[in-house]
Length: 637
Image 1: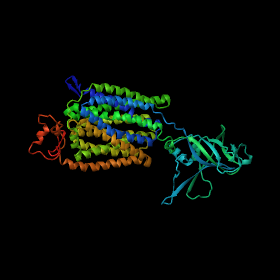
Image 2 (image 1 turned 90 degrees about the vertical axis):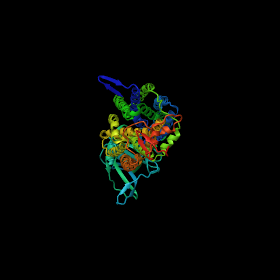
Image 3 (image 1 turned 135 degrees about the vertical axis):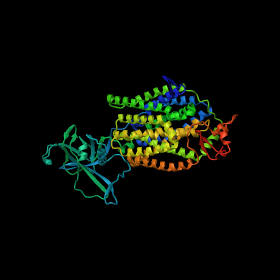
Image 4 (image 1 turned 180 degrees about the horizontal axis):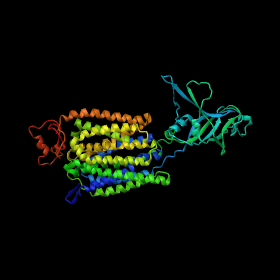
C-alpha cells in the first residue's frame, strides 16, 4: 500500500513484491489462457473433444490445489512451493507448442443422385420424414453414419453460414447396374437434343467408368430448388435442384443432357463447413487429442495451486488489514487486461500480415512474464507467523459446520457457471464470425470492470458483508447468461462483459475473504485451496463438460438460458437459507484476527483471545463470527 505524508509518498516495501507478482503472473495468464480454446480449435479439436479436456482438467485442479496448499501449511514452505509451481507452469505450457494439428481435409463428400434426360438435368435428394401431430412433416436424418452429407443438408448449412461462390466437383456412376452405355452431352445450346452442338461423353455401366464434372457456383444451384412431377413415396420427402452452369475438362457449359432418362449416383466434393456432422468423424480422439490432454494435464498440476498459495500469502502479509486484499489482487487484473489486449493486437496485426492468426506470440509472452513473476516472488517475505499443529482436527471442525458446507456448495455453483463462460463463450462468438479484436476487447472490459470492483471491494464488503455480495454475483450471472442467449451480432457481447466485475471480481473478493474468516490458524492456504479447488477445479470441470454436452444437444442459445434460470434459482434458495443462519450470529463488521483455534495449539503458554471469550459467563453456546474469525462453542472445541 502507498501512504502519502504531506509531499512525501511512502511505499509499503513488504507488499510491493506481492503486487508485482500478481501483476506479472496474471499478465502471463492474460496473454495465453483465454486463447487456449481457440488454439484447440485451430489444431482441429472438436467441441466434443474440447469439452472433455476442459472438463477433466479442473477435476485435477480440485485435488491438486488443496494438496499443495496443505503441504505448504504443514512445512511452512509457501514461497518455495509457489515459486516451483510458477516456474514449472511456464515450462509445461510451452510444451503445447509441440502438439501437432489434425489433418482435416478442406472438402467434404456429399452423396446425392443426379437425374439426366434429353431436356435437362437436376440433383435429387430423398430423405426420411415423419408426420407430426399437427399434420405436418419433419425431416429426420436416420442414417447410422452422419457422414457424408446430402445435398439438402449442405444447402441448408450453406444458407445458415452465408457461404457464396461454392465450387463443387462431382464424380458419378450409373445408379442402375447393367451392361449398357449412355450418351452424356455437355452443351451451351438450348435447341432440342438431336440438334444441339454437344461434347459427347459415353459412359458405360459395365466398366464402372466415372463421369466427372464440376458446378461453377453451387450457391446458385442450392437456391434453384425445383419441383418435378413424381410419384409420392411413403415416408420420404424429396428435394430437387436445377443443375446448371457446369465445368467439364476445364471448359464452361450451361447444362448436361442425356440421350435417355438416366440416374447417376454422384459424390460431390464441396468446401468444408463448420458444424456439418462430418467433422465428428474426422480423427476423433486421435494423437492431437491425446497429446494436448497430457500436456494440459501437466500444466494444470503446476498452475492450479498458484492462486491459492499467493492469496494465502497475501492475507498473511496483510494481517488485520485483510479487507485490502482486493487492492493487491487488482494489480493482477491490470496486468491481465493490459497484456490480453496487447497480445490480441499483435495477433490481429500478424493476421493481416500473414493472412493467418499466429498464436505463438502468446506462448512467448507467457513464458517471459512467468519468469518475471518468479523473480518478484523470490523477493516476497516468507510466511512465518502461521502455526500448523493439529491441522486435521481443526479442518474437521470446519467441515462439521453446515453453514460452511452450504457456502462451499455455492462456490461450486459459481465454478460451474464460470466454467461455462471460460470454456465456450469465445467458441460461441467465433461461430458468429466475431473478430479477434472483439475478443480482445471482451477481455479488456472484463479486466476493467473487475479492476473497478476490486478497488472498491473493501468498502462494499464493509458495507453489506461477504454473503450479500454472493447474492449480487448470482443475480449478475443470471442476467449475463440471459443476454448471451439474445446475441445477434458477436460484437454486441461488449455491452454484456462489464457484468464480469460482479460475477467474478466481487464474487472472488467475497469468497476468498469469507474463506480467510473460516480458516483455522495454520490452514489459511489450505482453506484458500479448498475454495479455489471447488471454484476453479471441480466446479469449472462440471461447467465445461456440461456445457459441451448442452451445446451439442440443445444449442448455444438454450444452453445460456438454462444457466440463467439455474443461477436465479440458486440465488432464491440461498437467500432464505442464509437468513436462517444470520439469526444465530452477528454481522461481520470490524476485522480482528481472533480465533478459537488457539486452544488446540501445542506448547502455548499464554491464553488466546478466543479462550478469554469462551471463559466469559455470558458466552453464547452458538457458533458466531467475532472480530473477523470464526468462533465456536465450547462443545465444538
